[in-house]
Image (cartoon, rainbow, N blue to C red; front, side, top):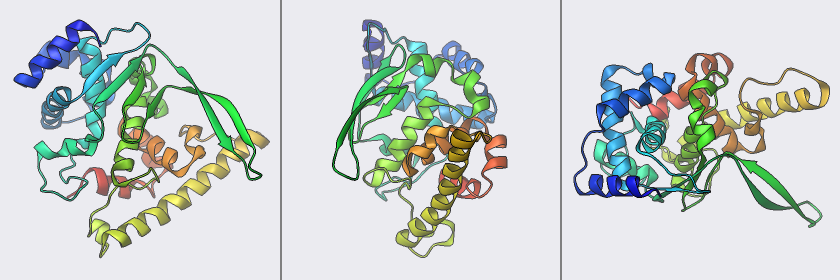
Length: 277
């Protein structure tokens, strides 16, 4: 963490207050999808970011110094999915002050200058262990910190047309993890979209998402193996259902018109979750 940001963060923790207007306006200018919010929504997001900055700690890696504008840019995108959420994932009393409990399982945000290479291992059906390298622009660890590539964060305004946003992607994983391991279904309350119980809500959610995921994977396979058209949504979502959920969430927030055109069956579920009545 840079010394200047560390001092500012400690000051906000002592006496949180609104983000300075020049810094906030610069973030809105850099990320066009935030400009589509109404003035009231922008005000609410700004207040939520102030709380977020008071709770989280930013750490620059690889010699990177996390400046105030960088941290505020990350906070704005991280808090966007929470803007209309009011219920806590543990079922507690709703309220603006409690909504950050969705992100309560971690404090640290590690910001890398660019992509990083992580060493991975997998076991195939015969029990053979395969080691490989994976290039990452971000990672959300269960009960742990979030890692982000600043290069990817900085380019998020331009990559919105492609439905790509690394911050929202990784924080969507945190929403998914709020009830345990990531499985493509965040905690859903009883009554969600008319369900009689949380169990029924989850079953109905997964039925729709698993169907959409299967179709998406088929399209990716046809494109990669037979020269078909690649889907608009990031093909990384074909890795697993939880990655499909995260990829869908980022596209939903930064390019709603295109997402709604390609995934009309998922739009009502995401609206019901992220914009509860």
